[in-house]
Image (cartoon, rainbow, N blue to C red; front, top):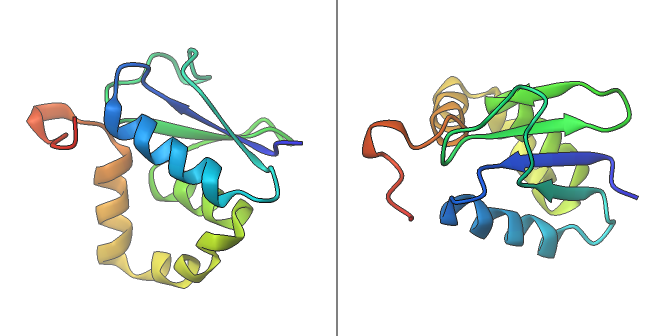
Length: 106
């Protein structure tokens, strides 16, 4: 049973590609993704939010990525890197969307 849901933009190829990877690496079945309207509203292409299905909390940016990493064991080695400010800033940019033509993986 899934414990987190990743909301992504339905027309973003980059988001769909990452969601497929998350599914492949999630051998415990804790992850699901959705292209529906997220609890925080409509998302921009490239923007994702992660919802903890147990508590109902919805997280963005590095906090959302950390929640995703805690649920998928293949990502556990990445958790210590999230304490590094430069890494957190990069994740904030990546999870924040493709505004200003930044989404080069479409």
